[in-house]
Structures are given as C-alpha cells and as structure tokens.
Image (cartoon, rainbow, N blue to C red; front, side):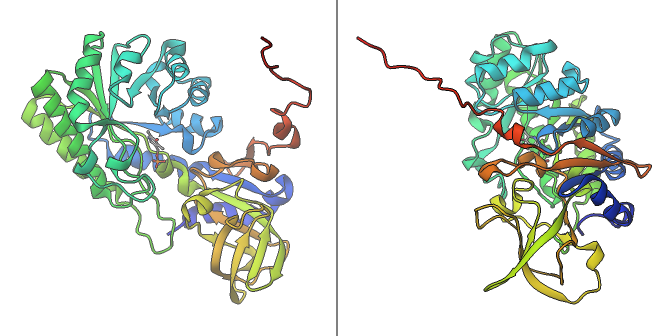
Length: 421
Ligand SMILES: *Cc1c(COP(=O)(O)O)cnc(C)c1O
C-alpha cells in the first residue's frame, strides 16, 4: 500500500506536463493528502484534552508545507537553531514550538530562548543546571531503558543516546523546580516508522505511569505528555497501514481512565513527521541510461543526494513507471550517478521494461527525503514542487546550483600562522 490511488489520480495524468515544465528530477508533494492525514489525526484524538500535533520539521523543512501545518492548528517540533528560525519565520509563537535537542550546546539554548522562547524539552538531567535562564514551562525527554523494546531505525532504548534514564527522572524535575520552573511536561520518543499502533498505546500508558510517579514522589503534576513521532507508513505493498483509529480510541480511553482515577489529565501531544507527509510525496526522475553487464542497470537523473533512505537504511521505496504500465517486466537495479555503489533506488526490482526518457515515480519520499539529501561527490539537491488541491503546481524550492555548492568554499589564503617565540 504505497501512495494512495487518489494521489496517483491527481498526479499521473499531469506528470508529463509537469516534468516538461519544471524539468526533472523533483520531489512533488500532495497538499490534499497532507490535509486529509492532518484531519484524520485530529479526528482520531478528538477526545483527548488539548490534543496537538507538533509537526517534526526535520521531516520536510519547507515553509509552504509548514504553513499547511499551521493552518491545521499544528505546532512544530524543532531540534536545531536553524529549524527554530524556520518555524518562527513561518509565524510560530513560543507555545507553538517544542524544542527537542540532543547533546545540547550553549548556542542551542540561546536559539531556543530567542524571540520569546519555546517549549524547552531537555534531553538530560545535567542540562537542568546548564539552561541559562530557566523557563516557567519545562519538559524532559524520558528514556525507559530496558523497560521497553525499540525498533530497527532508532535502536533499543537502553542503547539510544536520547533522554533521561528511569532512575534520574524524578530528580530531573526536582532540579528544574529548584531553579524556578513552575509548569511541566513529559516527553518520549522510542520508535521510528512503527506500524503497530499498540506500541504507541503502550508508550502513552507508560508516560501516564511516570506522571503518576512524579505526582506521588515529587508532588509535580504534568501539564502535557508528548509521545514523540515514529508513527509508521506502509512503504512496501504488503505492509498494512497503521491503525490510526484504534490508536486514537485506545489512547483516549487511557487518558479518560486516568482522569476518572485522579481527577485531572495531562494534555496529549505528538510530533509526527513521517506519518504527516511521507506518503504524500514522490521523487520523479527520468531514465537517462541503461547498461547490461552482470545485471541490468537503469540509470536515472536523480541520485542519493535527493533520497538517502535506501542507501542508509536499505529502505524500500516503491517505484512505478506510469507511462510504461503494461510492458513486460524485467529485474533491474535503478541507480543514480554517484561514485558509491549504494547509490541505488532499487536493487533487483521487477519493473516494466524501461527506455530512456521514461519517467519513474519513487514513492513515499515526503518525509526524510529531500531533507536528508547531501552534496557528497558534488551532487546537488533537486527542486521541490507542491500540487495544490485545485490541480495547480507550485515550485516551493529551487534546485541547488553550482553557486550554492561553492558558497562555503574559500579560494584566497586564510591561514593562522604559527606563534613565534
Ligand atoms: C525525528 C523526530 C520526530 C519525528 O519522527 P517521525 O518518525 O518522522 O515521526 C519527532 N520527535 C523527535 C524528537 C524526533 O527526533
């Protein structure tokens, strides 16, 4: 179940025209699909008090996409100074931003406190003393260690570098309270691309237990819990999609039980990136070569500079060739031009027989796609386009050019001479 039939119906009839107008390669995102997913998320958690999604900016850091998120009432999850600037440039107010950094530097803290601040999420107990000015509202990222299993992308919690350990969590709040914090939140993020909704239900239940402990042991009440991102999308045709409705129903039930027992309930936040935009983007690239050596290779005009996931994680991205449907199939590797043998979008994949000039649609690139791109080997990142609900297509980021690549290079001598004694 890769991208939806509805997105295909919106995109494929126009694809040739779009490719001729804008040139290839490009990522193209589907505004309609993003809005539908946002509406589904809100519907699933309608019963949760104060529900809010903070879109994980790193998944698709583009102002046009981020404004769609604001328009739906969502905030932003940021983890670096530039991501904070981006969110603020898109109109985010302090309460609209969660800042979840890791191995936080002084400049990260300064960026977080800029422009009225944001909701600061601390990744370690030691940071309680390092925050230059303690905000009134503060949050910690909790790492349950061996109490929970993780998954392949993010690793086991006890091996993951994130968060405050179980034995430190109560003291962590004690410390920030001593420094003047008055309002508190609790965060975690344990899984990535998780398709089993029950994992997320357990995560919400786990946080509620920690809330209880903080109240009993330290008399501190959490204003919100945030289960992070990590909701999965079905990249492979045989993957079943995450059961969002059941996830919503069971988490809301847990929250309402908590309220019945204790007379209050924290607000419920999440910060999905992949789930919000992943299935609503594709990378469109043209076949420019083919070669037959020990295998048949299909060379395309995009490279892993546009999409790293197959190379980094061995990730599967479904590929279709809309103009080639019905041709006999053959097994090929689809490759880019990088001097890296893992610059492959597909390995030994059965695809319709392709010829030069055919367009390929590499699916589910709407999250952690363009954003992870890099310039190794002097390969430049491609443009991004947005398909609006009225069928119009807008360029929302130009392709990188050689000047961008050279922007940080220095051709004049610029050296520190050795000290003379
Ligand atoms: C990456 C990240 C997210 C988003 O993860 P997805 O898998 O895209 O949902 C959310 N929160 C934090 C802290 C992250 O690092």
